[in-house]
Image (cartoon, rainbow, N blue to C red; front, side):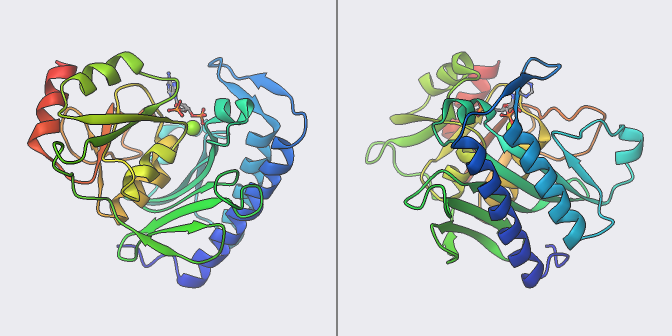
Length: 282
Ligand SMILES: Nc1ncnc2c1ncn2[C@@H]1O[C@H](COP(=O)(O)O)[C@@H](OP(=O)(O)O)[C@H]1O
Ligand SMILES: [Mg+2]
């Protein structure tokens, strides 16, 4: 459990992430330029505006705590390996969804302690009834639980749900709009009765955290900043984010590479999906 983030710091962080979200929304609503990064992935003005806003916020609230952002990731492992505690951020996850203007993008801020995401905020400024003003926000903190804000500052507790009897209620499986469709289908074919839903960005993990989805198998690459904030939400909501090979929780900052192993997000472990997973990745 982290007592590093006090209630007042958390309030300031949530306010600051919302302010960064409003900067992103202003860009979303006008014409914006799209560049290509070295790895051929897109970069917009909004990614950089959010990056600068979040870095300034974190430096103000927790001076001296190191920050690793998708947009300033060139910090060698020799330096990062000594970090006991750091902020890991993805200023705009789902950049392609942002460009397509379907609203399924998020701002992601995680506090990682000894490799474990212990606190996280995921903010989707263009979702919900007050899209573009308050949007929707999920946050979780070890020892405090997980919560959703939907259009207001009210924190509603959320929980990952117990897997239903699939004969009575099909399992809900969430997958990416763009990545890993073949392996996702191979896994789903081996499951009992289920329904699939597609979603962009770290919102997929939030759906499991709030009990709107049962499983999110990610059998395609992601980076640590894509998942850390939402992993903190999922675990605080009673769920898990597990490496598909070891079924151990994902850890950050364990090596030079910031690539995650393939993983599955669940409310709880269950033999039925574990055997489907083993067969589909064999
Ligand atoms: N080949 C690859 N290697 C690493 N990460 C990848 C990847 N292909 C996609 N991703 C990650 O997957 C995220 C999008 O996932 P999804 O399509 O499920 O929403 C991207 O986030 P960004 O939008 O922040 O770049 C990106 O980080
Ligand atoms: Mg991302």
